[in-house]
Image 1: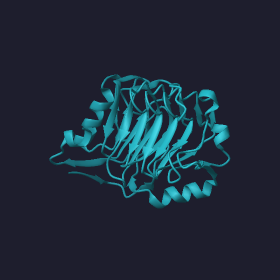
Image 2 (image 1 turned 90 degrees about the horizontal axis):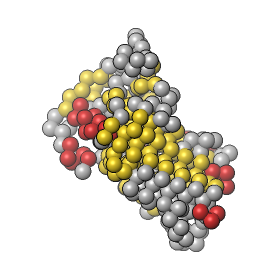
Image 3 (image 1 turned 180 degrees about the horizontal axis):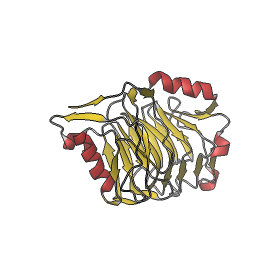
Length: 287
């Protein structure tokens, strides 16, 4: 088991936005390289670190999707220049959250991002490109969100929701385009498997605005039940739904990155952590 004890009583509810070029306080800083993200997640699990910061460059996972079974916050230095070659498979407990911000996931051999009946997915300023199956797919879980994300050139659907799952989308920079490159007639830019699976798009966005130029105009379509469960909702509806189910998590205070990337700019109000790790089974967490 692993426990985290904060010397601060400050908390926030749900994911917080980290600006590009800002490394959150207490994050494990990761240089680009072969299997750099996988190795960082293993280290974070052992040391009880809740945030991983990926520096700009190529984080090469060989196109593999990394299984994640713990709550974690993965932040890139910038979406344009922080590239992960591979995907993310979110598992773990339903009450957990896995947050990903400010990076690009590219050339996954399977799904770019996959939520499989476990932790909820929260993507913010993430680009998912050239995935071997779906760009983003969720099964069963409902507290999922995407904000200002790009999903493009997936072989199957751009965003697919299965098994009674739900994905909520917001942000004017959202774009689901040029997906379904495999040419299959059952795939779309936006796809829900059945009437119990849904995609909620926060106003003023609409499915017509965000899903464009997918294979042969297959931007969205009917599911196996013969209906379209993709709808636009009011911003207050989306906020209330997520807030009611979010966990309380420790506040992460950002620090600015110095130009030489060796010395963080001092912050007199930094929150420090005490970490205790006992009998952590890495194989169980990641495989």
